[in-house]
Image (cartoon, rainbow, N blue to C red):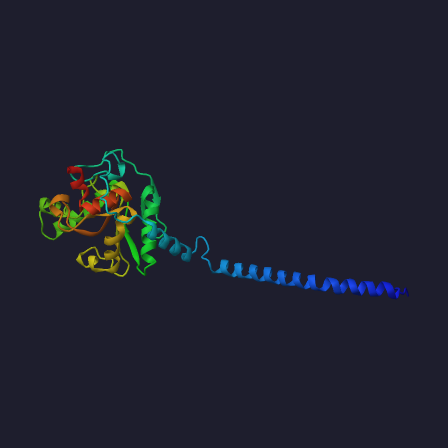
Length: 266
């Protein structure tokens, strides 16, 4: 066995004593760093992951908070050259070659104009973040689908005793003839409360519809056929029918209490 000289051993012991204090400090710093990393990992775990329902709700809340609000100065009138302000009615039918770019909705068997997809998603997510539950009852319809819907409504009224002309006139109060419906643009969507999916007067009293009427403009939508404007729009009041026109146009029309028909007539 090798023996270390006593002198060397003393010097080594002295050096260890001299190093002990700095090493203790290093251990303290290392422990603090480990604690900081654990805290950061825990905070990261509490954050909603992208694509999760919690992330959608968080994003919706942030989106709702950052949407423009009515300013002291009135909004400027939008340009009538804006394609989002397309007027569609019995007097203004769509061009025969009109073909919107569509995006399929994830939760319902409908499509909507691609440009309106994200605003619609944000609007419904913002409402859900407040405890509301929505159902999309209708969105884009092809001209053939619109024709079928119109004809079925006419036939139902004829079977109730109306003449053909009476049935068509009554049906047109609620359902546009083919080529004349906003649903054919892909920019219109019917939204109802999940626990009340009736398209009737009871819909406007639901918390979901009340919220949409107050907030839809923040996401670029307007209530297309409001109460009291039936003589202007030619359509009876539909509390569930929303039309995408873009945020600035929606703000202007809402502030001025104008329908799209009145805007074009001005």
